[in-house]
Amino acid sequence: MNRHTILKAANALLLAGVLSVTWFAGRAFHRMHVNDPIYPAPGLTEKILLSRYHSALRSGPADTEIYLFSGKEKGGRLLVLGGTHPNEPAGFLAAVLMVENLQVEKGDVWIIPRANRSGFTHNDPQEASPQRFVLTTAKGDRSFRFGSRLTNPVHQWPDPILHINPAGQVLSGSDSRNLNRAYPGKKEGVLTERTAFAIMELIRTEGIDLALDLHEAAPEYPVINAMVFHENSAELAAVALMDLQLQNMDFRLEESPPSLRGLSHREWGDHSEAASILLESANVSHGRLKGKTSASLIVEGRDKNYVRAAARGLLFVPFDEAGIPLKERVARHLAAVRSLTAGLGDMHPDREIILHRFPSPELVREKGAEACLAPPNQR
Ligand SMILES: [Zn+2]
Image 1 (tube, rainbow, N blue to C red):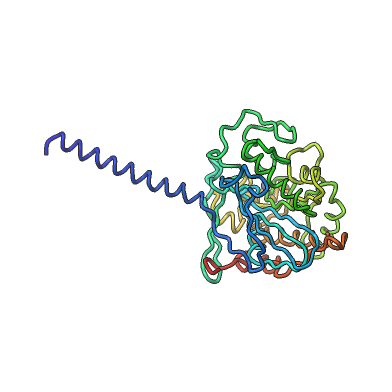
Image 2 (cartoon, rainbow, N blue to C red; image 1 turned 90 degrees about the vertical axis):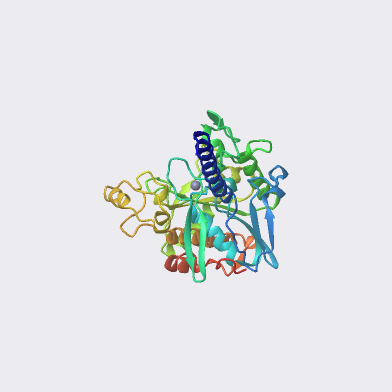
């Protein structure tokens, strides 16, 4: 074999290697853009896409599913958002559990599990976050994407150095991709602002009475285990809190500061009639003190660093070796949605919403979200 032939063979080998790496990387990249399946309960009335409320989103990365459940009888109108921040899985899962179980007797319920759909297609850089976590149902595994707090830069780029959001607040450039800084949205804005505009249009055109945005935050963050309420819903938040305390679930009540602009609990309430509330649960995988970020950290919520931080009084929630597991965080969201919905009907009988087959917070708290998830590929 002469030198020329050896070189040709080496080149061919190198090319084959490069092509196979590219193929595997491309396949992994493509898979991140495919939605994990959600199996709606038989009570589903209609699956809608967000572009119904702003046609500029049609068929793009932000055109997310909305699940509508309508009762036979007219009543109140509820909107629930999960996945505003796709690295906060308790809110997303609470929304999924509602979609997979709910039957509505009276009123209408809109649920958006992946409010920032683009954010589910990537991870936060330099956080070494896992791409997925798995929950095991009686009939198989359900795997879910663990996404990023922000819209994927593949879909919205470049970030400005400073960003003035649609409510006029000056923010860091990357916050131009943060859905919960983009309200009330901008019709001709960047993708995240258009998404916020579409959600705002849904709230206005459907006459939503109660709009809930489900989040998680680090245990060292002061607004935690909290219900952040717009001043239009102070009484409702207080009524729901009393109900939740009777269920052994305490929440911190925080009034939405009028100077903090662009957030759901502020702008939804300022730009519509909807009672607007944001819920936060405590997630260690979100915090700065955590050890290795792994799928088990997301699901089990146990971390030694946080046990030490709690002993030194540095946290805003109690924290011990048992951690704060996903099942506890999802149960808190579900319980709050249930109590707020009941409170709305108690205060305004014409806005009553009667829910059947609501995923039980008690069952989720004891057995995990998997106890109420549909088995994979069964419907
Ligand atoms: Zn959040």
